[in-house]
Amino acid sequence: QVQLVESGGGLVQAGGSLRLSCAASGSTFSIDDMGWYRQAPGKQRELVASISRDSSPNYADSEKGRFTISRDNAKNTVYLQMNSLKPEDTAIYYCHAEIWILRFKYSYWGQGTQVTVSS
Image 1 (cartoon, rainbow, N blue to C red):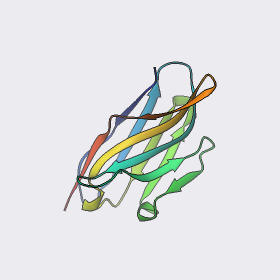
Image 2: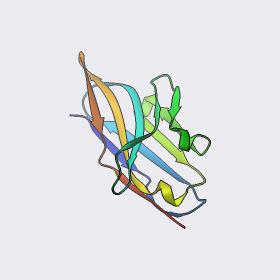
Image 3: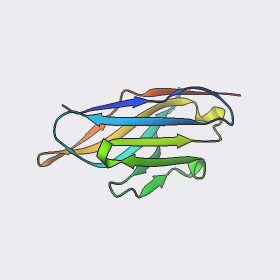
Image 4: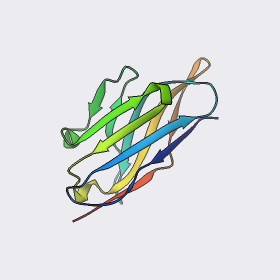
């Protein structure tokens, strides 16, 4: 069984920074794309950023220049560095990964970590 465990959320003032981490653990597997999504109250879950296995990033337009996604394949971990945070960044942030187990690819989600940005 594969698990994604997130950490790094919290409360920060506007203009501040946070770094989220998400580590995959469990049975033998290979990870393809990893990414971060967020869901604010009353809104749909949306993509924040994703990164391929060869570390090619993809960002939502609103996060370009403020957020940086990276990964460490040796540690099965993806990171999201968030700078210049705004109150509208307040949401639960979810880690996502596409994981190969034997010959099949599965979609996994973390439990979510709360990010709250105060004005």
